[in-house]
Length: 209
Image (cartoon, rainbow, N blue to C red):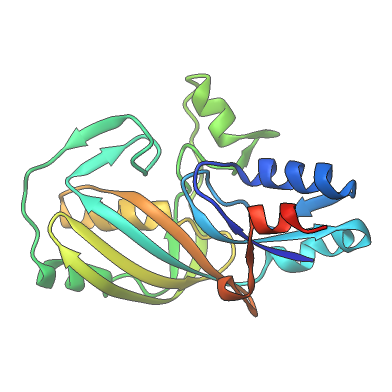
């Protein structure tokens, strides 16, 4: 098992490919991180790949930076801007809306996600211009804390169940505020009992003899 601190701008699959090539082993990750995201990616190698399913259900923790007043088709700043809004939001309004997100909630995954629809990943269909109706799924938000707020930017930390999309959370927060919101940065800090502080950067791992 390798704990990788994934860099920004690379897919989780590409991380696995580079590890396979370097060590000439069978490998697979246990939960996708978007190219925009950084942080803990658990990679299993060799016979350990058989244990992947036991990692998929682990809860996770994230730190997220988002911006108000913008909505995109990907729910993050790498997507196409669909709407802009100049309505100012106060910290009190934001904190009030955050309190509405707690426990079990229904969440619709982003159109550009790894969620499979009819055997194809949603983002593959979206890139072809095919509109997909992704059904909402019940997920759990164990904790949600506002860390910083300087309009239009805010950062929050959250602990969530498996299958949770922080991009959808930011989008839904923006909708409830009537202002729109989209994710700028995501960092996964924990997967079950494993923390990003225990991880090595990808370059460190690839430079190991």
